[in-house]
Amino acid sequence: MSHTNAIPFIHAFFIIKKEKYFENNKDIINDFKKNPGLHHIAKNRGIEVEQVYNIIKTHDINVLNTNVIKLIGSK
Image (cartoon, rainbow, N blue to C red):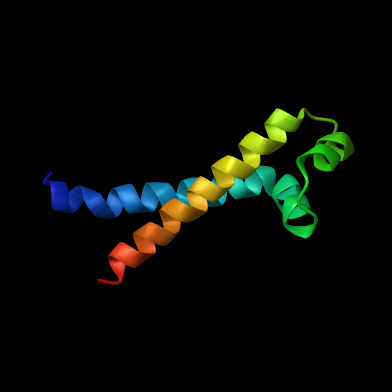
């Protein structure tokens, strides 16, 4: 498989990864969108602040990757 043939598969992987990650963490991500604040989300969800931070950070990276893929695909 050549490099150019692998690119669509890599793009699909990141898009699917983003959707799956969002589905698994949508309550926390939606809480953050409504009212940003790691401490109150952690307290309300009964988890550590670091966990909330990591969930939001990973979600943002996934969104960024997907946006870059869309940009590359539009050229």
